[in-house]
Image (tube, rainbow, N blue to C red; front, side, top):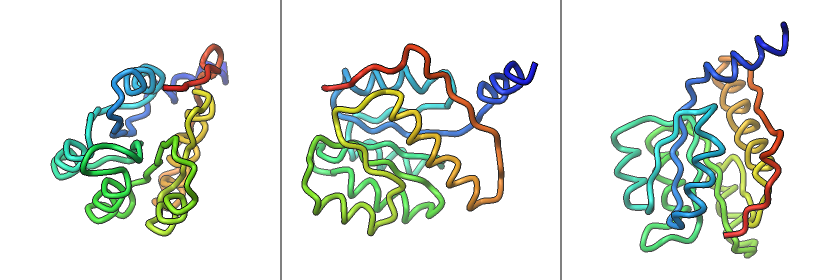
Length: 155
């Protein structure tokens, strides 16, 4: 009975996530893994992400670091300027500590190195949303299904 209630609460979540990734294959995989539990909006570039951020509020932005003219750091800056409560996760294959430090200085919630396991992404998303809720005092319940989602993503 308790497990059924927890699953119901997970499915009732209304958290809004903006997913920004220029690699369509990776964007589709991440979308599929998150769409059962969250309301996902996709953007395929930093420019599109910034346009979308001007139109809608998001609880979390998951963005690639290296994309065209507007990179993930610029998306992070704009997300925080528009709504400081928005959490941001930067995803990257770039292991340069300079970007990591800059992202954390700009109040990124997390920095996820590629390749990563999908279960790791789910946990990071959950942690960032819990952090947002605790700072906003909402206290919602979070539960994710991780069964077959323990797959390595290397795109």
